[in-house]
Picture 1 (cartoon, rainbow, N blue to C red):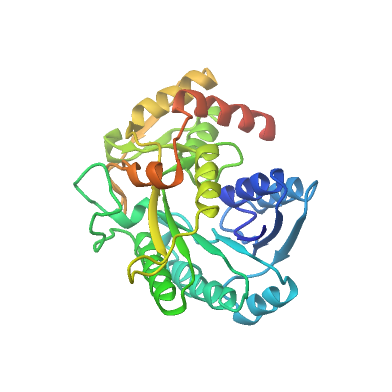
Picture 2 (cartoon, rainbow, N blue to C red):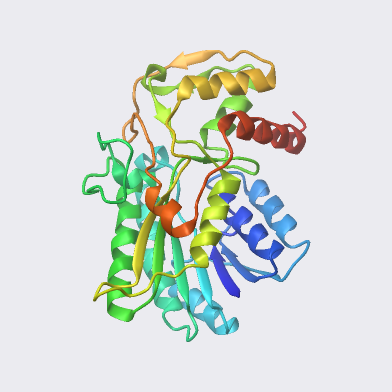
Length: 326
């Protein structure tokens, strides 16, 4: 298997590349290594990937058509694509909305157009998000739910990517699967995510921001479980069925909405320090609760998340202390 992975220097992209290399696949990683967060962390991830296995890295912006076309021409024989490159983060979309449309909509289209030129493409797997569900009051969130009212621009752009992919599957017969990720955390994580923010601020003796006065739940999902779901999906391209295009959507979550304050308490316990909590109102674009219905991913992909937050948080803290010498 020869796999193109976009967003290879990112959190989920790094772990996905490492897992593919570990099972002997050829991996072509793509990333523009932008400065949305600490570039040195992205470079450190890439350094790990370059240490072993059949890994090639291309630094480029996926929204640049000529660059993507050239990349595809340089690497014949790509059979699978894992498209993870995206402008992430709900709150940053209030500051720089154009970055989201460029990467998550235009970039998604450019990658699809470039990959459509591949003769042997078997499966195109792409990252979506639980943010597409918006403030859905029905729990748990199911892929059968209507998703017409995202509450953030980020969620809107990820839903746009789903719709674009669906049309490409129908028009061009490209087998595609979208994976809606739920609050992924773990070693090598993103600095703008809760586990990272809370750990850094607690160790620095700074107050941690807790929105909606702490009355929130998240379906925290450990990175190893997410990667296992990605690989299981990659190996199972959807068939064209009874006139329907070869296209599927799945939730990848831990199937449990954890109380945010319990998550914070576990970080405090692991660090051996008490947090100073700054209670704040709900932020624009945020939602009170996420909770994944994973029945279809269990049935079709054999997806069974195994890591609880009681196991996952200490693993993250152990990595954080070692990486930052904290």
